[in-house]
Length: 134
Image (cartoon, rainbow, N blue to C red; front, side, top):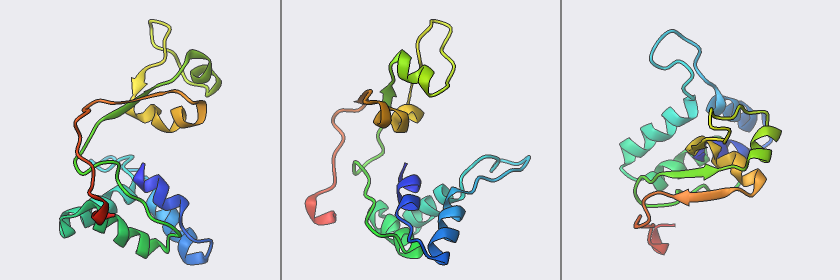
């Protein structure tokens, strides 16, 4: 999701549009990187090199010429998932589960935002970043 947000903030110049496309590029291969997005690899690389997710996101934003800032929801990894109603799920053109219901998945979160669905944080004691970090 952070990759998508950073891509959306790319500037409209040739530089910004090229880097937007680089961030969204998915590898097509028979190897382990098949269907992985280049932008996620870049983000994780900077997180690991810098030891700080916020600093890593800021560096990616600078590279992209992003107009704005992308911040993580929490200071540690967390699981979120979305439940989308049957009508919205069908309207989006997705298949239902065998039980006739849409699945509850992390990948539903962007769809849930469009259809005002239910979002749930799985680990409710997740620490957030202190205000000074952002």
